[in-house]
Length: 307
Image 1 (cartoon, rainbow, N blue to C red):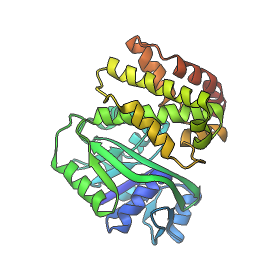
Image 2: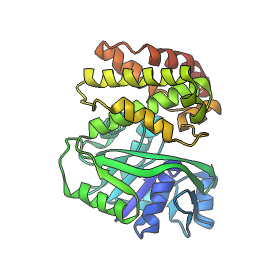
Image 3: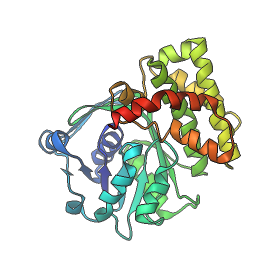
């Protein structure tokens, strides 16, 4: 399978690396020093599941050099999706599938607005990973997994083929029976954990062990659960229980990418996570006071990071 990975950091770099290691024809789209290192010394991945090196790693800064592919794996930050959709157009042909792995629930619709609905499927991933330095990815938590599906939940040949490629690469992969439920299940976990973590500036171990902060996490999760049902998304009754169990399973020093970006004064996924919850709640007439509070406290930092 001809695969392009657009956004080759902690998410795209890890999953693209696994696919390349399994023999798939993978091209990484990267820039600057990261691109230089990929081309010279390759992609180094340190993982709790076993380290590996992709050398040489096929990489370019120019999607036009790649041309149409079978699959585009999109690993950019959520706020970069519209720009990435425009950039990937030279790689999207009649047979191309675009798989977004962003946090939040907006990526597929943003991609479809630029590319049309036909190439786009829904997707998400589960991994704790980051770009340590150019050409070097570190996977530090969770068993890496991907879940995806057609936006209308049909079981198509292309979905089966993508599942087979990830499975062959040793990545835990699942085809969602309802992709919207899957996306909202991830949102329930990540928006609560990211928002509370960024607000309190503490890692998973401290968040879950402090009674006050744990209560705040649960309140944030329960608000998303109620919002999902108000918008017709039938999240299972045990969604909050499973989400807090996921927080409990994180490494004690685990943090979200949004939390790390906010702490570093960088643009973050605040708008795609807590901001999206606030926006959708206002549309649906649902009260989400915890997310209103989190978003209100962090929005000024986000505005400063974006100049």
